Image 1: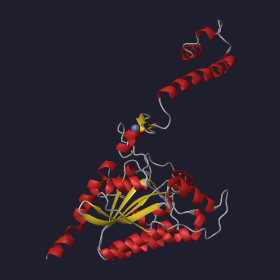
Image 2 (image 1 turned 135 degrees about the vertical axis):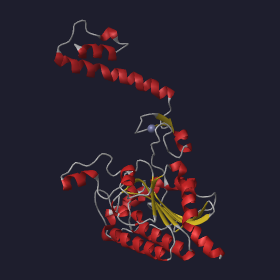
Image 3 (image 1 turned 45 degrees about the vertical axis):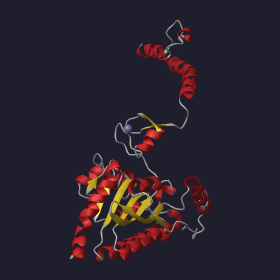
Image 4 (image 1 turned 90 degrees about the vertical axis):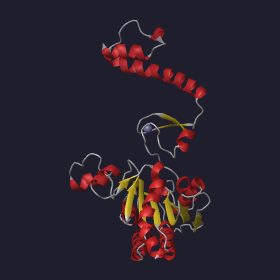
Length: 319
Ligand SMILES: [Zn+2]
């Protein structure tokens, strides 16, 4: 009987359609299904009239509808629950560096289909499609910039380009960036987001882990700082190389950080995973990262950390 009263309520205005008799239990579902589409159609029609499509985004965390422009102005952070939406590399650079100080490096470097990879689609066709849709050449943008008073070498990954996967271009661009930072005696900052190595490039992709790590080792030998910022998600080959090598490792709130996915780990270890496993908050508690920094505070925090990390150098230069 409960179900019957629920059905009555849900059809609200269309009471005339209601059968006089309580329908038998099997017919319940049929009645609900038969009437729902007409209600849905009315609802969606009125919604379409009021709200133009594509202007509102539903927050996946608190389900609030957020006006697109408001979300952009808030650096893609939900103002209700502080959920951090993904943000493109260009927008992120804009939010961090001083106006007009970003000099991009290797802007035209693109991947070559060395393995002649053919899957459901060829690697070549994938690259072309992503270049067209994202207006990017690959999954990282690198360059020299000024953040506060500090000159720095900055690399920002973009998840929109093939899941931020690390192929030979990502590895090469980051290595050149690190080497330039070392050469100039500037700090290096890399903001990561990645699903890991790019399978279309096989071993060439895995080699980038060693290459970027070696460049960072030379950078460290010169006693120059490297700050790694982990954003949602940073996993696999990227996390297992340069992303976890920072003198300081910062992360955005709620970011998923790890090597293999939770399902793989669960299947391999046959153990229950603790709550919050692989989140930035969990890893802060366990000492893998140094701080969680909300996106809106990232610039000021980076400046504060750079002040601290380069203080010794300034004193030595003054003496
Ligand atoms: Zn929210």
